[in-house]
Image (tube, rainbow, N blue to C red; front, side, top):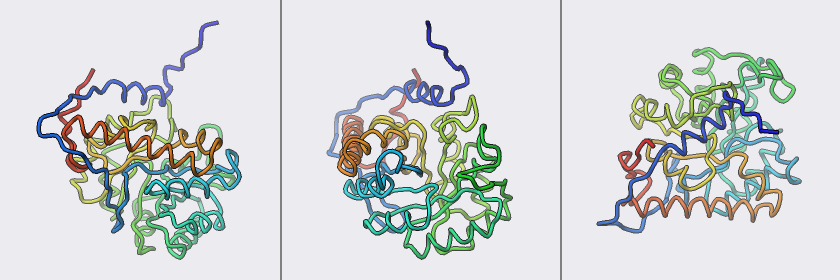
Length: 296
């Protein structure tokens, strides 16, 4: 029986868009590139980061902590999604720099408590997963068993002002939300459709250049969804992203080899990124020329 294709599958649409971008090679005056990545006063070996994953204990015991160890060993930033206070503390205890993303809980007191805990734990940054405001298609107004709710611009401002940490908004996929994020004073944007939160979602890379033009380097712009290889990371950086996040692709190496498998994955993807930079005369991640990309 032929496989049924869901035409609205946002992950497939996103993969197709990645694959539609072709790369022009440039060789004369090439140099060995650096993948060094600076973020919020810290310097890392790579702009390839761990996405705001959750529940990795289903993949491997203490999965989030093991993943954090792997990203630390690769010189990379780890993000964290849903998880209790103890898990975040254990992730930080590895020495990993962690960005904590909080769901838009209906009760703002819960959000403020989690912001405060992230700051006390020494996180690199904290933020909110705004695309979970109505929960998910199958769990309306729920996220991990807790009720969620839409947040206003004024509420986002309150969250930003509640911490000395950089506050990041995850789930931006429009110019409108980008302007509002800047208005609220956020210090980072993650362009994402949350692995197909809605059918026919716009591929993050397609809107990324518009968001980058609005931001004008005032704050970092990150991208997730479908980043599975170094060339994917290269294309995102060429279109203006400051960093990229790896999601589900982390789970296989984590299940098989724990932190060591995660480290190998990040280093492999970073090597592929470095190679793409080398053959396009891109000396560092800030200097990747978007004109090296062509539409298929």
